[in-house]
Length: 224
Image (cartoon, rainbow, N blue to C red; front, side):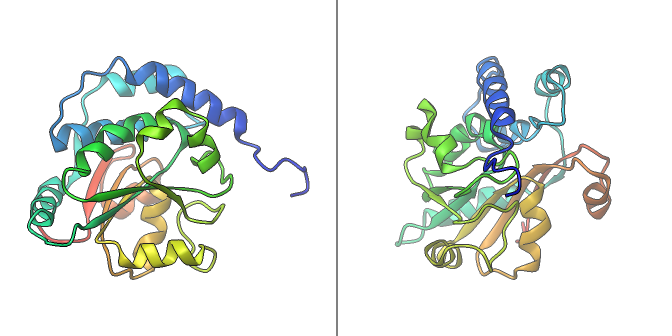
């Protein structure tokens, strides 16, 4: 890197983590799947280009999914309990501050399957890295954490580590947080089922889904 700075978004991530820590404690939490999905997607509102006051307003507003396939996810999870071999879910994390919003959903999903929290190996914009997570007290609450082996937004299979690739193709479900995964995963034709959870923050993504800008999305690539 020309600047010699391997993590140019380090201060941004620290600020996002501080914001998330302060805001998540004020949110009333229910333990059902729809509520925890709503909480997790709220975390996707925290981003370096959104000012704090706007984020606060977003977090105080109820989540209404413009695309809602939660029923399909719920049915799949119920079916997971019927499988003799414990299924595996890869929870693909997004921005650094979102881990506080992800943890309750991560723990809920553990009732149905083995859940692996997937972060970036090295800095990629403001995405959560293993180093970022390990520096937080909350990090130890994610029972199993691996990295993609990459430092790119979304997922580029030509760059991921061999160990991650084997884990990826053998997973039963990918829960993919953030637009980066929505932009890249559909083109990879992976065998695991995929459930996307994100906020449509830019016009091309919103248009591709035929939803208003800044809509919340809970979208499966499998049927209800």
